[in-house]
Structures are given as structure tokens and as C-alpha cells.
Length: 538
Image (tube, rainbow, N blue to C red; front, top):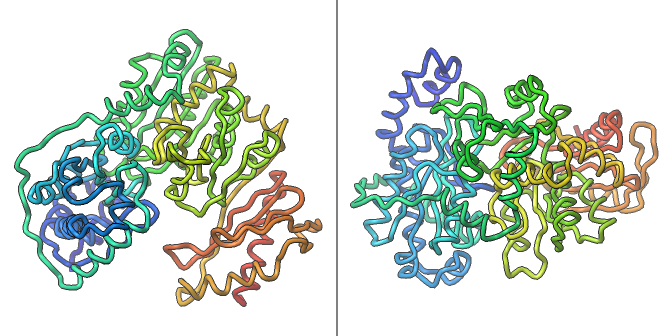
């Protein structure tokens, strides 16, 4: 029996040869009314287009959101930052999508249902996640619905919900959406399609430009002048995503900026559209073929909330760049506050913060956990917040991960320091210490997934308390600190560390580690694996 999944498997096996099969995927998406289990993870609901991400299921989730609006639960309304249903109707919802297959068509389904309830809708069309976040604030909208699965492969669709502060929806909101939607799914409903009465368009890129200009964390004029006057080359790989054209609009046309993969391609050329090391080859080729004094490369994911960097000498992942951003914003731009980082992120930033007397806030994985430090009325405001999975935002900026901000601040770094990124990073590590982060993991028996796995792994924190001496590669290291906000993180007396946490989506245990030398990473990984297997009795 042919299914959407089998069609996708064939398409992705040879995207050039089998692109025509997308017409079959559209048929499944329109005709498949099978219910799905709705789970809003760290960044929304995601599913395979035509299998569980279908037109009917998108209508079900939208209907669940409308029901949540009408319920007017005080806790939900407070989390959304609205006074009630009438306030939502008046302030309205921004609806848009990345450039995935059927994005505009799915958006029309959402808009039609919202308009039927008298809710004002503004259609953003193809837009990047940080643009939604800025647009909500600039328009004083009640919320946004952004149809994107972020960096997931081409067969996925997604559904992000952002409340009125522009940040990712918290559990108070998403748990209620899940509860209502899955209750509806249990009855296998077929929701009638509603054709939108009108399409009110909004220019989120224009609003984003106004937003970053007013917030003043970035010096756009300095960035423009640097590009115009200096011997520079900037290469940006959009991976066929919704960020295409954005930097051109923000800082203008320039022959010194080269853009890669800006064409329409629902299948992303057959690659996973993520800012990975392997996906940087095109950028690195451009940089190595030129000889300008200043060279910067960047790659973004399709919805623009993740970014990775390169210069002529090395790739620079967020583990390093987030620390560089803290140093730059505090030392060179005089911004004070705290630094917020996910617990699996490099401790280079801790070393910098320690010497500069900046408090460090380590959170669970998930950008929504940075919200308390990103709000403008926060008592402890973040100078920068970042996670090792390529997400960053900064002082007075969006509550969402913002790859556009990431590009702009990297250019400003070069303009102010007079150095390429790797030169600046070397100077920082010469002063604050050298750190070598990495990550890996092991598969476990599927029967262990969930609470059982968490319970077994909790034995690690009981065995390795502060002061415990551990043999790592023949060297004795003392546990200096135990952090348990997300799994178990053991920080040793030399600044190296390991973190062990169960995957939230798969029967796997993930290791995040950091050594003080490149050669030392293998021994730290081996220690993490041994601790895990001992705890699980493997």
C-alpha cells in the first residue's frame, strides 16, 4: 500500500529524479483525515507532511487554539499577555510560514478558521522566525502562528505558536493546546475548511528592520559603513530558506556580499537544511577562493533561528560564538547584565563571565527557558543568551532565536575589533582559557525510554557528588560542581566537564562534554559512556 511516508522515502532517495511525486504528497495531505498525536516540543508541533501533518490535522490544532482562546483561562491568558478573547480578536494573530511545500496553502487553512471567529489575521507570507517575534511586538499582536518545522528535513511540516511577548510559547499554553487537540483527535473529527474572507498582508521584514533599529543593540550604520569601506567579503548560505533577501534589505545591496542557495526548492537539494559542519562546504569554498582582509561566512536554517559561522581559518559553532558575543557586547559595547546559556553549552563563557564578574544562568535545553532573562522588565537582563544547538539572541532583541541578529553582530564584531572571527576568538581564549566542546550519545533499549531511563540515570548524581575524585584518561579529576537542571552535569576542577541526559524524543542517552585540550575529548567521552553504562547496568 502506498503511503505518504513511502512516497517521501522515494522522493528523498533522489530529489531530482522524483520531485514530481510531490503531487502525490499533496493528495495525501488533502485527503488523509487520520488523527495524529499532537506534541508541542521545545519549538512547536512537527510532523511528516501527508502522514500526520495534514490539512485536517492543521485545522484540528487551529480549532484547539481557538477553543483555548474562548475558554479564557486566567493562567493561559496571563501567559499569553492578553486580557481575554475580545482582546485577541482585536489585536489579532500574525500567520505565516517558511518556504516548505504547501506553506501558503496550510496558512490559508489557519487564516480561514481564525477569521470565522472574528479574529483579525495578518498574513506574513514567507517569513523568518525572528521576524514573527519582532512583528508581534511592533504590531502589538496577540500572538503568531508560524508554520515551520525549523531545521527538520523536507518531509516535515511544523506549527509554532508565539504569545504577545514574541517568545516561544511556554508550557502553560502548549500543554493546553495539546490537551484540547488530542481530545479532539480521539474523536477523529473532520473539520470543515473555511475559505478566508480576505488576506491582510503585513511586511514583517520591514517591521524587523524598524525593531532592531529602535532597540539599538546593533549599530546598523557601522555595519553598512564597514562593508562599504573595508576590504571584505561576506558569504551567506540561505539553504533555500525564508531568510533569503533579508540581509539585503537590512543593509542594502553590495557586491561584497554573496548569497548561496536562494532559489525556490521545497526539497533543499536533498540535504537536511541545518547549519551543520558538512553543510558549510559551499561557504568555505567561497571564502577560500578569495583573498579579502575580512572574510565571514554564515549558514542559516530555513526559518532563520539557527546559525553557524566560518572564516578563512575555521568554522565557529555557537559554543564559541555565544561566548564571543558576551565579550563583545560587554567589553566593546558596555552592556551589563547576566549571561544565559543552556546547560550543555561550553564553559568558555563561564570563564569569561567569571573574570568580568557577570552572573551566569544555566537553564534546561530549550530557548523558551531564557524568557525570564530576555524580558525588558526583567530584574536580571541577559547581555546574550545562547544554546549549543546554534541559537542566539541578545540584549533588547527578540525572545526567539535570531539568526539575522547573529549575522549582523558578527559583522559588527569585525568592524569594531578589526579582526576576523577566529582571530578574535584566539585572543579571547588566550586570555580566558582554551575549551574544546563536543557531543555524542548511545542508543538504549526502547523499553527504557521515559521516566524509567531518567530514574536509572539519576544514580549518576548520587554517586558522583562534589569532591568525588574521578579517573579520566589516567588523570585524577575532582568534581567541583554538580548541576542537575537538565540531566546531570559534572564540572571538574580543571574546568572540563561532562553532561549526561536522556533524549526527550528517542531511546538514547546524550553526552555533552568539554575538555581543555583537543586530545582530551576522547577520554571525557569514555568517562561519560562508562558512567552511563554503569548506571543502566549495561
